[in-house]
Length: 110
Length: 113
Image (cartoon, rainbow over all chains, first blue to last red; front, side):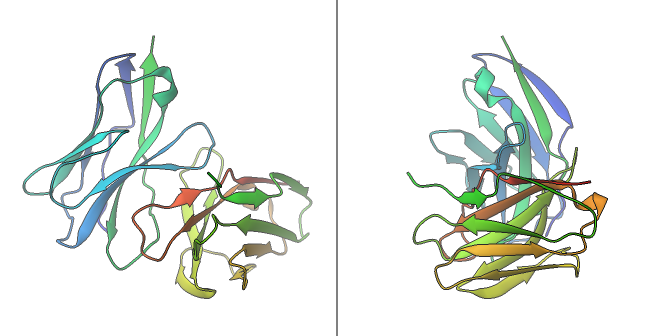
């Protein structure tokens, strides 16, 4: 599975959009980009995933660059409850395991 | 909606003892994953099962074993416990494998003294 690189921490003002970047320059053609988050020692929570196209669901949007070497998770209106560690994970289509990297600690401030 | 159930939620054991962690997946989910998260660390994949067969294996110590039963619940057995085994153990379930979304349980906090 491709290695990902994320900034260790970010701050965001409550109500503003949070943009979390992820680099995955060695991603292969059949590998998906997944985002999970973990709120203080709770079980990780799935957010969104994508292959090539941009994706949006009720939680977030995922923007993947055309060369697929990087992506950005967007939380459109961050709340205090979005404070968590956000993991960008690249996973192939033939395996179910998730390989968690360092992740980005997002702190949403009032 | 029903979620993944893990028991016990907290467990305290002494070195060299044995521990058994249980995981009850979401109804109709046939795949179970186990992850270990040490203090201040990121979750690490241990092992997974699909339809009661081991489907993938990570960095699981030989002292650990796991299985998935006919009702799809899973148990992680840990023997000769060491201080370094103190961690949060998460179970996740999904429908099929590989599945887009894994649903994680609340975890079992194991403390080895």
